[in-house]
Each structure stands twice: as structure tokens, then as C-alpha cells.
Length: 99
Image 1 (cartoon, rainbow, N blue to C red):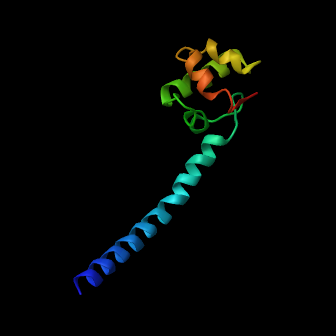
Image 2 (cartoon, rainbow, N blue to C red):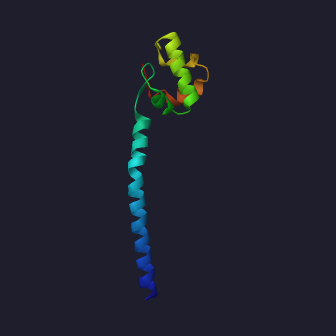
Image 3 (cartoon, one colour):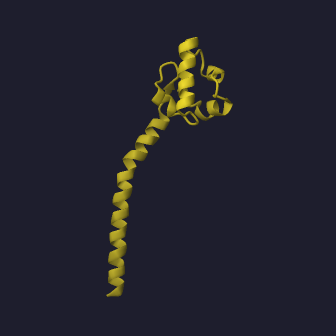
């Protein structure tokens, strides 16, 4: 009887864990989808830029301000001209950046 109760408890906990994981999957899939989308640095919104690794609100705003002051970026390497954007941020995001 004790073994049956233990097995029942394990089965019940497994079901609850599976439901919890299933609920989290759409959020994780959405995060992965956003992380794989290309970002056009000449058109990107603040939120688009914040989705880049190492870019928060302050850096995203610096990119937009630079773009408004100096015109469109000619290449993704021009991001290095933006204060706060260094080689590491550029390297971390190079696969997602486009003009």
C-alpha cells in the first residue's frame, strides 16, 4: 500500500511539472524568436534595440540619438561610433544586425 501511495504521488507531481513546463514554453519560444530576429539599425525602435545583447535603454537611446543626428548608418560597424557601444557589444550581436 505504501508503494502504491508513493507511485501515485510521483505520478501526480510529474503531471504538475509537465503542465508547468508546458505553460513556460510559449514564453521561452517567444524570447528565442525575438533573439533570432534581425535588427535593422537604421529603422529599429527603442524596444528592438533593447532586445540586443548588452544593449539597455540608455544604449538604445544613444543609438537612436546618433542616428537622428548623423543620419543613417552606412554599415553595422558604424555602431562603434556610438558612445557606449564597443567591440564586444558589436561582436555579440553581429549576426542579428543589418542595414
